[in-house]
Image 1 (spheres, rainbow, N blue to C red):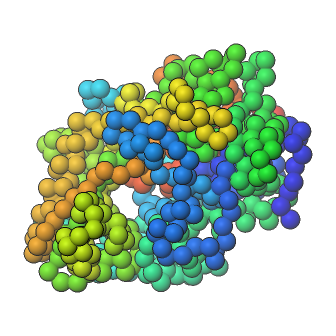
Image 2 (image 1 turned 90 degrees about the vertical axis):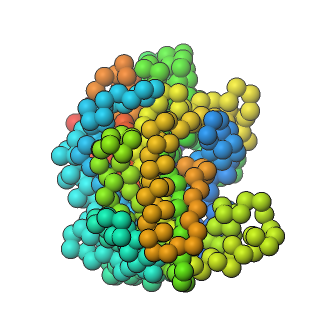
Image 3 (image 1 turned 120 degrees about the vertical axis):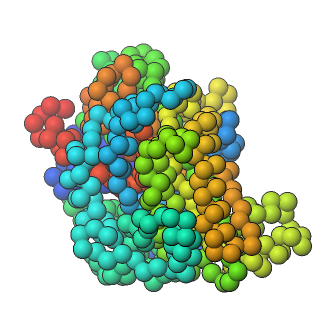
Length: 518
């Protein structure tokens, strides 16, 4: 039976958020008989609630509370994250690449780019390799641990043929946390498509149906869904003592804690730190460096679609099971620093028509829908350099339903980003044109799903928020446990790295607790 700890039990570890970061951390701590209260703002869904319908699942899963966007971040929904038990692991497409070695040392590799705040991670690929290996085994990542890769879809075959035509060679169906064969009581992928809507058969790894039930099978895990954390409480010494939250019935509560771990995805983790300012921490918690909220990164992303001479039906098959890795390198002869990947991509007919014909319904719009079956698509995912001016702050006047300032996400694309996208689009066009595409179009204006960097790790407390374990420099019993930790973005999808970091953090935090150091 799931645990039910008392609000005054100051021995518990409170984890805010139940996604890739929080769910992993909590499930690892309870294995060590450490009591965990996990507070999740969103509801809990059952497998029967998941359908292969992007529009319906968007409304169910998305964090729809208003955020303000500035610069190149669209207002209203400048980022896309989930508000549900299991977090954004319901939405993720389950791509699981590791960071490359050079991506852990961006400053040393690239030098400081104009207007950027590049820094090296305080850890290396060598430090991360055992944790990556543990995460890959836990998730059942294809292409690792003798797990076969997923089969190629028609969309993949088009991408691969075009890529080889223009000289690319590092191509396969990717490292995916989607079963290519039955594993851990879950079935093999049936190539249903629309993977960002969840997975209706549970072939895709999702925390909701993996970490969470496993943790609940112990006597040490107390999950409280639809509980919105509104602040982190501190005492007169500045030490964290617990969290304040509004429960499912709308009642304000306070949970005592020995340690608090924030894993609420980047925007909400940052908002909590800033909203929890106190006399001892006037600029927000863990913010003596003035780096909380700064260095926000979101990956360079853009879509490329080719109208092929024959039918492709890109929606059939695992959405992102395909990658071209040849551009994952640092080669300034291309006109930019850092690398990018092409991933396979499929989106719904109504989305594609809106991208392609934004003026709306009419003859041209209808023609775009008619051609949907002939489309092949890829998405560019590239390294986004950190800039101090790209940041998350609190709105000066606008409040949410809990009376808290809403988040303001300010993001402007760097010149390096524009050069990378221009190059990637040019090569993508060549790829599809080599196969006789009658039209190629691109689109890059959408809210971010890969959010990183606002509470970066580092060895120097003057220029970073956390140490190499995610423990904040200012408050030893406050940890950051999500993508906010990232020092640079790399070009790899971030979830595998988040999970690996949390396996590592759980080991460190459990050691501190067992030794009585917190």
